[in-house]
Image 1 (cartoon, rainbow, N blue to C red):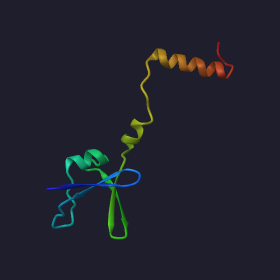
Image 2: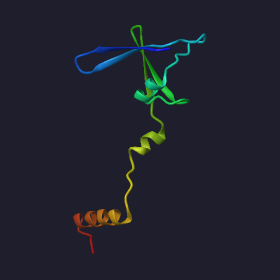
Image 3: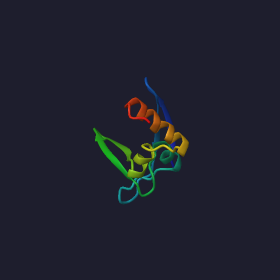
Image 4: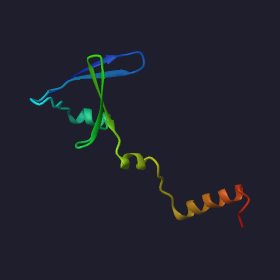
Length: 93
């Protein structure tokens, strides 16, 4: 059971949720929160305490970081880029 409250701020709209806390202190989120924040089951979150507030942020996996670092190219695109670089360096041909 989570209720949602929307609080407008100067820069963006913040969403505030009421979440259940288990007997051992587990904080239970819902799918909407996980989808919006990128929190994954079994993943890690960074917990920051600011006054009496607890801020949770997902920690990206190596795979998440690598997904952003690579692009897919066809052999033709790769050859064109290689030729451009060689021409810029004066070593083409």
